Image 1 (cartoon, helix red, strand yellow):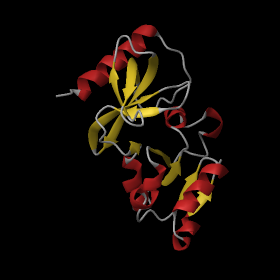
Image 2 (cartoon, rainbow, N blue to C red):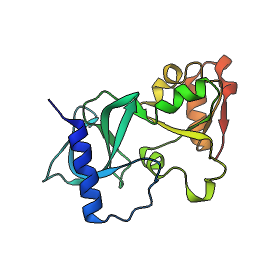
Image 3 (cartoon, rainbow, N blue to C red):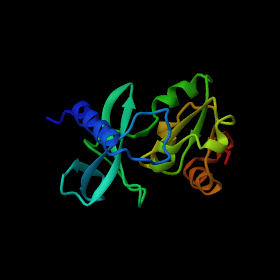
Amino acid sequence: MIDIEHEFMRSIRLAKATGIDFPLSHRVQWGVAAVSFYGADRELYEPDPNGRTMAFIAPVVEGDLIDLCAVDPQTNHCATRMGLGHGLGIDGIEKARTWCCDLHLLSSAMAWLRYPLASNVAAHARAEPVYLFKLSEIRRAFDQVPSFTCETIELMERVVALLPPSERARVQFDG
């Protein structure tokens, strides 16, 4: 059995030991690990000391820590450790359903790791950032979310195309 908590802590220790200086958010803890991607669409990963990719490791939290996500900073490719997670920042969706915060959909896992960008900190103080591994799951994932914003116009257009016309008004652009 995979001990994701142990793996995550090891990646955090490695990030601290290597002194990586990368402009990432301080709102979430992250680590690094050498990894190998595998699966039909390279949707899974495993730590691999001989792996060709040095990836950022982020927690996938849906109530509890259920999975880990490896993000290749060169390509923005991301994969989960166990295939259980639906995205990063998923806990924010439930908050948005109760109108306690704004939901901000991001276009990549790296954008989620960097959020909020220094220039937009005040504008996004109440926003919960979310990145979905499969954008095609937007309708199910954001069910009963009254409204949300998208990071780019291109992302907003992709989201609108996935929703029925009756649900499109709740999608806004906030770049």
